[in-house]
Image 1: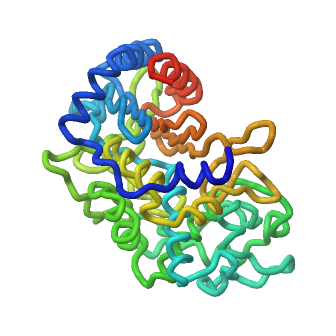
Image 2: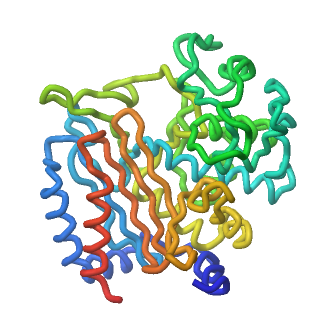
Length: 381
């Protein structure tokens, strides 16, 4: 894809008016075959109406072709998955964190070339030289995985937050010299959330709501940053999924909110913790496509890999043709029964979002491949 075409694709004047009655009628009438095929794909994947399931979004040329939930958001309360059911996005959250960093760079409140000690002086000077914000974004920092640290004290009763890990991380040697290689590591994005918070002088969840979610039209997306996180409901009210894993023939709840289930031991943010729905993710796709949050040249930077790994940019997994040109970008996520993906297929001008709460029982890669085939077979070229 030529650079000019790439910029035009990501640019645009205004957000598409997704949910008007006329557009919904048109999309439904034009895509009955695709809808029927996706329903069969769900059945073939073994997803039953009385079990945890999956929410499927397909956006093409700026409009949703499929925006449907299949199965249950909660087994005990028998609530169905709908287009406004919110899921823990897991590592798909990293795309939002990276965007927040780039917003702050455009505002000149930080630079991705800054030494991270400018914002996190609790960390030491390392023999291999400074770790820069760019190194965190690209997963080349060499920092150890915070989830593998032992005996980390909690400032709050019963759960960890990002800053709890700084003393322990400061005592750890790097796993490898900064910049030596790419190694995907949640520590990088957990620290990026702290940097966003300190650069913006705002709690991370507040900054995300004010500078990322609301400008994107995502009024019902939130960061689960404390037990008291306020989840703004739509009208009518949206429900929240519970993450499950299959165990000995039963569905065991792993992650969710009261009153049905609660798990608050890990409330770190940045590497995960964004909760959103299909309706909201359609608005996220529109914000990216129309440059509503960051400039096209900044998005182009985000979709550029590092010398250590050309297939990971600034918060995005990148997919290239044999000639090196970019044909798609996205991210996957897994956390405590949630299994998620966002994928923008530039060459085909469509985006798919999968949000599942069936844990490892959901073969996301196989489902996505078959879904992609259905999109090509059942939509106009």
